[in-house]
Image (cartoon, rainbow, N blue to C red; front, side, top):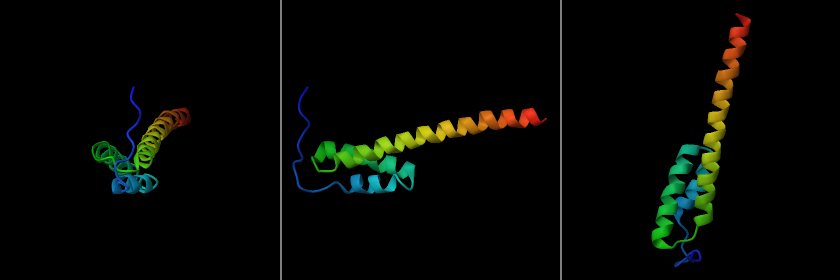
Length: 85
């Protein structure tokens, strides 16, 4: 396995920065920008891989927690309604 590529330029990938900031407010946009940034960084060697990766990880964790919360509400909300009937 080869070592990770070092940045070939001193420029930061703008999508990585936007993705990391956006994921805290709008998860879907943060995920999209994070994935775009990872793709661009792989091609260009720009800085910001950590930010892009953080945006993607945080985004997918938020999606999973949202799905679990929705399932919890549906299951236990339905049980509470049927118990009151």
